[in-house]
Length: 102
Image 1 (cartoon, rainbow, N blue to C red):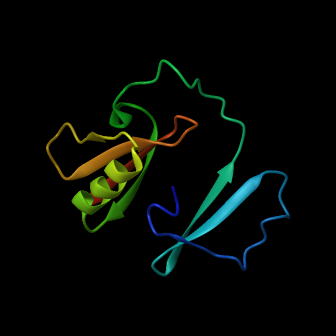
Image 2 (cartoon, rainbow, N blue to C red):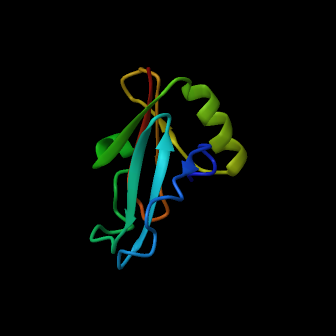
């Protein structure tokens, strides 16, 4: 997903010091730290729309460009049910992500 979103990995951060896979991703001058931990949540039976489930939200400038990228990659997503410019998708471990336009 990081490559789809054009996020650059911060190679200076220690990737081999923790007992699980990690990634520090640059988002402008800020970073997101992702940790791949055992998922205690079920993969099935989750709400179809990620906005109705626990999720993290990332602000972006143009939701329509992200939707084009997701469409090309064959990654499913749903739109905000409120009508605001936001897109919800899931990682393969079923955790939801929201991308909202600012």
